[in-house]
Each structure stands twice: as C-alpha cells, then as structure tokens.
Image (tube, helix red, strand yellow):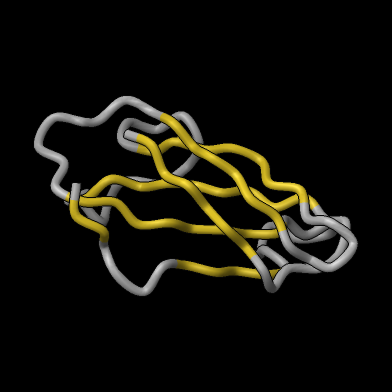
Length: 92
C-alpha cells in the first residue's frame, strides 16, 4: 500500500505524525504507529506550512480502503495540538 500525502495548511516548520489506516477496522482497536493495518511516518512542513510525504506499508488481508489521520503532538498534553483526517475512505 502506498499513499502520497500533500499537506498545505500546517504550522510553519513543524513536525506532524501521519497515519494511513486501512479499513475496515474494528472500532475497539487503536490506530497507533506499528499497529496492524496502520502505516505511519513523520511529515515536516516548510516555512509556509506545506509538506509532502509518501507513506508505504503492507496491505492487510481483507482491507478494502484507507483513510489518513494527521496530528501535531502537544508538548504538554496527550491531546494533539492539531488534528486532520481525510473526508472519505479511498478504495484500494
């Protein structure tokens, strides 16, 4: 599985965590980096807040689509400073 991510609305010169999550996925399972069906990578924005990244990972058996989750970790909390997600599940 390969996903090309283009991000244009981030904070300048900032690290974001990008996760590509395969569906269907039971709602009881977490979507952390390294979990089955989750490919993750770091995206660094430029001085205008834009960045691009290609995320690769193995395709899970039975996966029919993927969606993207982008977060900016907080320095002082478990709750992300920023949170973005794709609007649709893209078909595989």
